[in-house]
Length: 301
Image (cartoon, rainbow, N blue to C red; front, top):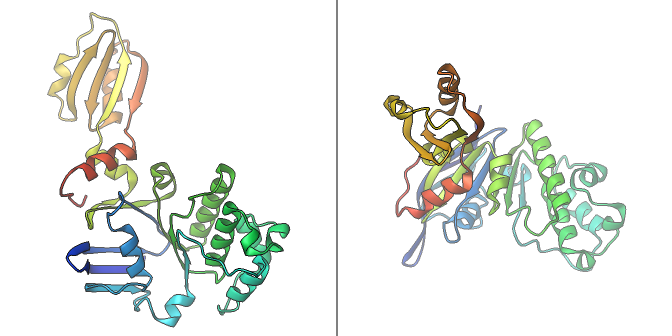
């Protein structure tokens, strides 16, 4: 696998404020990576530098081993920003055709319509007459126009309905299957967990965590196996196992915090405890997000 995007020791200062502080990461061909972080974490600043809209105070950004401003880079990069500003007075089809002709090998109008859900009626509508959801779909179509190898999307599913959001992520999955690389920012943690193979979590301008959603959760979120059992069954000796952190009983239910839920379940059945109503709680990305961003300084996982 080869790096499509490389951010190396990048810092961005605005007067006395450091928005991004010595951040380094790379994204490889075919990856779907999500940028997460609270407001002011540095997400928009890092995206702007990746796109060449801002110059780093220090460090370098390269796409396809070239600066972001390189024409060849722009021809292979599709972008959808959070605020979609569309040329007024033009029909959606006209605007798409205009943008398509900037690229050497654009996608066909039919393909763009199929991928984004833009109807024939939508395409014949002037941009200022489009609804918010239609404008988002058109913005997505514009990002896909050049059949890009790299897609960079800032809050792409904001302001669209549930059905359109489902179709959007299906299209992103399809693009990844075609070998495209996708990087997106989002406030929807469930979307990041379901769609991304990798999470880049920003906090106070630093990269607080970098890894697959499951790996991040396992490092910072408590996992547990809970079940019901007879009152005379004891589990006190289980705290001697290295993968079990604690055993608690609440009325008729046992709560076991563990680093390995599979091994805990095996032990549960090996000892023939008679447990029933068994539940496995693997934690949520939201809990990991809260734990990591509540700390003053995060550690890269």
